View 1 (cartoon, rainbow, N blue to C red):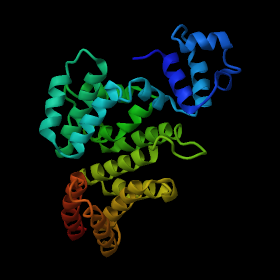
View 2 (cartoon, helix red, strand yellow):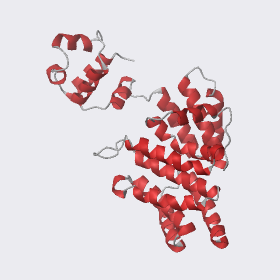
View 3 (spheres, rainbow, N blue to C red):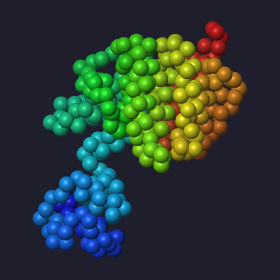
View 4 (cartoon, rainbow, N blue to C red):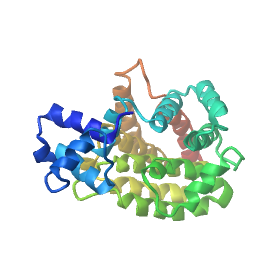
Length: 297
């Protein structure tokens, strides 16, 4: 990995900036020369100011400094998420098995998170096992979540419901909303938090249905509707409409819900090579169980 200054120099030259344009008000010319030669370290405050002048984010800078490669943590997250989304559970199980006792803390934590995912996928009640205990304790004990914790908030839902009771979910939702607001700015949603909130509310909705807490399931529509469509990506809008359509199958107008689901699946079928298997699985289960719910209520 190159020194910070060496990478900064290459980016500066690629963008056609002079040292004066980038470093004025941050450091002296002589210091800047030595910094770009790898001779000086600088504070985070100065680094952020330099990156602002270069119009480049911290994440992109790190990516470039690593020779245009993801960090080891990001690689682990990307690999395991791809396996999960494709329901390649043998590969995901093998990754967890080979990394759960890793010398690297981040690999042990990712393995722990994915142990939860594997359990939660086809278990309505998820007990706390030694494999998932580290992730569970860490997420609950942390009062102020960073983006990484927010990206994993949906995993907590079945665990909390199983081990504290479904009545504990509203308190978890309050914590989720509080921490999410830190990352929603007047300029928009730069970290795609609202998409994660949709996943969270969808998970709560499913969990409430699984536990037959239909009052709590009904309440999720208000949370889903509170997310403004204008702030969502195309994928986010489809996810929002998917959950609202499932809600209609249970509690609203069945014909409206089914018609909207048919439209969503028609879009999904435009891409048959890489289908969203999770979406299809949820749809199949919920259509059947919604019919049973309607028959009994």
